[in-house]
Image (cartoon, rainbow, N blue to C red; front, top):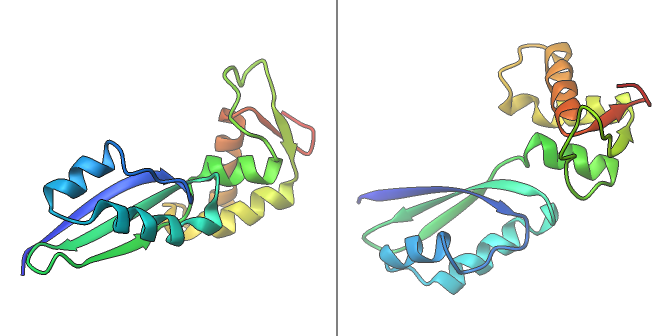
Length: 141
């Protein structure tokens, strides 16, 4: 029972059957429309955010299983800030402000997938990402 795993990063609830996913699924002789529909259903709660998705395909039976990961740190931060996209020049152009409570909330959400051993280390990591995408925290750079 050979299996194939496909890992992709998609926009939640907005997957299209075109490249690069469509051709990959077609090569495995899967119903592209059905897979895309299931991915969109599974990622609907993360609409507008970037989400990692893993598709495990049984090559004999053509059955597939979809597992959705935690959205990217920058997507979670942008949603908390109410911003559309990261700053093109984060050193000079700040796009929004988030509270320290928002940073801690994102750190708690992402901690299982981070290499940080403590919540303090996870918060520092999230603060670094916030700075890289042009966010201020409690109105401070």
